Every structure is written in structure tokens, then in C-alpha cells.
Length: 321
Ligand code: HEM
Image (tube, rainbow, N blue to C red; front, side, top):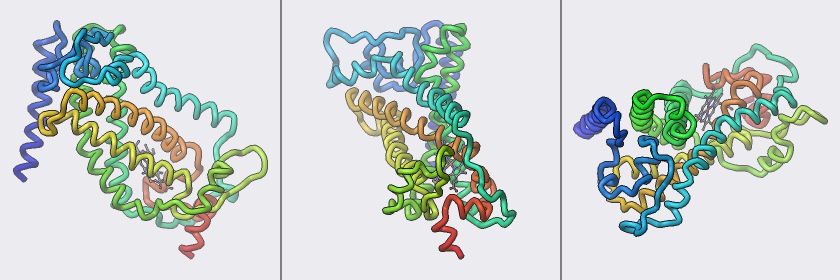
């Protein structure tokens, strides 16, 4: 309980500090987080890369303090490319998926809806999914501002609106970490047994799950989870884990006693994981909402139509019967 109060106070103090900083420091736009790292800050280093100052370039000093790795700093210094990659992993993949659906169409139920519903997910699973998913979406949106706002948004804003936007995004980003971690751990623990790869998963990938409408209609074998869902699950498990570890280390540099070099490496890990998770999330959301007719009820009610189960998860349906 004491720990919970300490965490809560930490978040509250963090948000207040952020707010006060926004009110008083508009002119200098100095970041108020990262105190430990900031003491040894290299111009353009982590706090600045989070979008606070106006300076876009990473200026490598003549001598690199501590053990900061020049190569890692070099990658992090490519702030425009990082911003582009992060935005492309979201908006670029959305654009590609829209084009794909316009050309290919969606996957309809061959025999329409039967009207008979089958239980697929428990109420707890549905709640855990939305706990992790909503937090993940808010992390992605606030992350967009932190990673590329300086390049894409700041030029069109005045200094105080920009400082307020970054302050809010930074606060939201750090607040959403906790529901995300809870959702992540529960999803992994509860669902991993259903996501074990099998031999027929390769066949599923070979025909892209039967989602391509051109040519002969195919519905490859799938158990409770199909191969695409399993891939998403394990990518989420791996890169979501990297994101959490790197994020926590950056958030609590004093607790983890990180060197500047480790902190920079963590930021790089965080960015790479973000790009991968964002691209996969867009595909996952499109598959659930648009691409697979009848798929969305799984995560709203926990139930699916019998014909949806037969068409997309034939082996699971047989097992149930
Ligand atoms: C971006 C954050 C999200 C994460 C991390 C996430 C994660 C997951 C995971 C790990 C699964 C289980 C894998 C599987 O068997 O399919 C799943 C299932 C599902 N998700 Fe998400 N999800 C997210 C967002 C969304 C959104 C925004 C929607 C819809 C608007 C959605 C709809 C679904 C549906 C319908 C299923 C069930 C699929 C089935 O029963 O076969 N998810 N999600």
C-alpha cells in the first residue's frame, strides 16, 4: 500500500513539476524530467530529443563525457529520420492498409452470419485486452508528439502551446505506462498457452490466411489463434517487453543507476520497439475492425458467430464440438 502511495505521489509530483515548468519556463523550454541525466546533458541529448527545446540538431561535443557511445549518439542524433520512421510506422501503414483494402476488398463470411453465438473470450480477457490496448494507443499517440512533434508540429505552433502540448504528452505517456504494464503482463500470462506455434501455421502464412480475394478461395487450418494472431502475440510479447524495460530504465535513471550510455541505448531500443509495435498494431486493428467480417464482436462481447469460427478457426470449432 505504502508503495502504491509512493508511486502515486511520484506521478503527481511529476505532473505538477511538469505543469509548473510549463508555466515558468516557456522562454527557455527546459525539460524538467531526467534530472540525473540532465546534469551531464550533452546539447541535443535525451531530454532534448524528447521534444522540449527548439534545437533540432544533435551537437556532438568535442569530447564525449562519461561513457556515451558516439555511434549510439549518432543514431539518436538523426532526429528527423527517427521522427519520420515513427510517423511512417503509423500513418504509412494505415495508408498501405487502406490501399490494400481498396484493391483486395475485405474478407466476408462465405455463408453469412448464422446468428448462433459461441463464447470465445472470458469477460476478464476482454477487460484485460482493453486495459492494455487503450493504454497502448494513448502511448502511441503521445509518443508521436514526443518523437516527431518538434519536426512536424512545432513549426506551426507558438512556443507556449508547443510547451503545453509536450508537457501534457510527456505526463500522459508516463501515466499510461502503468495500465500498459498491467495489461501486458496479464495478456502474456493468460494467453500464451493458446499461442504456441504449430506445423499448420506455415500453411496459413503461405496463403496469407486466405485473406487474399483474388484466385481460389482458401481457408487454411487454424486452432484458437491463427498464425497471424500468434505472430502478433509474440511480437507484442517481445517488443512490448523491450519497450517496458527500456522505458522504465529511462523513467527511473537514479533507481537503475544507469550511465548515460545505457540511457541512450535504452532510448534507441525504445524507438526501434515503438516502430515495430506501431506497425503491427495498425495491422491488428484493421484486421479486427474492417478486414474480418464478424471479428470485432470477439473483443466487445467475448462471443463470435458460429460461421466466423468455422471459417477462420476451423480446428478450434471442431474441438469445441
Ligand atoms: C494497440 C493496442 C492493442 C494491443 C496491444 C492488442 C493486443 C491483442 C492481443 C495480444 C490479442 C490476442 C491475439 C489474438 O489471439 O488475436 C488481441 C486480440 C484482439 N484484439 Fe487487440 N490489441 C490492441 C488493440 C486493439 C484494438 C484497437 C482493437 C479493435 C478496435 C482490437 C481488437 C481485437 C480483437 C477483435 C481481438 C480478438 C481476435 C480473435 O478473437 O481472434 N485490438 N489483441
